[in-house]
Image (tube, rainbow, N blue to C red; front, side, top):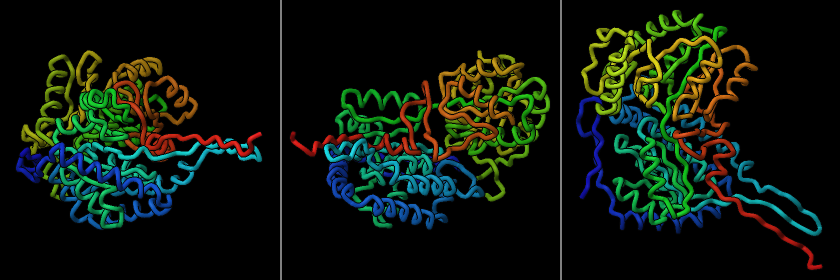
Length: 461
């Protein structure tokens, strides 16, 4: 029997483990979901929406368990209180738009014809959730999928092994039928086998680019719907008219919060030459104020990375950049908790260029690089010089300028004077190797349903 383990970044211990399901047992669970989905979809929409919201409320009641679990599993400090703010905001918003998003599109209702397009649930939706924001990323799909009448089968990353189990427990205790929302523990090979056999009608995956490729390969020929949110190398651009202090505060937080482990975190910043020196100086001071330590300590503001192998990648990118001429400006002596393992001090690099891996490949850690630019065109060229495209953060008081630059950026979301935020009213999507599809907003509901046309002729002559 294969055991799936969560190795805690806090102390390297095995925090939790569960046996992986066999393909046969998983197929039985999926079969139960498929059967239960029919009755679930027949329930009134408002009834489904309210049960989902009750599930959200029940999970909120588990805060005293959820927050320390997250600290143990993936290292986020308990002082930040888990993910409830975003989890609740997204759930409540999709609930508020569900009726309109799923309403039939009526083309004609005359004495002669009734023509309309309706939205029908796909059937069984498979959510493969990541470890970095395991509740918020999962709810992006789970809430609208269930509200739309799908059954959901969720599988979490081993690093946050208990999250799916806890989510399902909360929703079932709130009244969602147990076969409609199920948590399963699978190894990669079994997941691929189930996908390749067409067991799911829609698959949502958040994770690495290579993970996305493996999902696409497994699903090839099944015609299952797929939504992929993959890597990111999100840029910020600070223009000469920017609010400097606000830009430093937001961009540094976006680069280092959650130990930089955010798909839409800021990883590279381009600053107009007139503000460059001041921006760098203030950024180094901002980052240097972190307290790196045990995430269970309420005084800790920066916890360990989720796994020491993730921290190793960041350290290597920093070392390679420095060897190629970059300068690391944050004094490591300020962070005695940096143990060479999962506990990693934050870093700000300058004298970087796009030949360096730290400017090209996803870092996914508390390290950010800053480059000087002379013009909008130069900044646009650099921002687009990436195989990823999730978000871009523009800093200027000029809305027209932000719109003009934004229209030239190869990205899924353009922010102005903001960063590292997911607005549930807007579709969350990316371009290039960041993925395909989109979640949340009205379009998120459309991706989790299929259109069905009705052409009803009321007369025969």
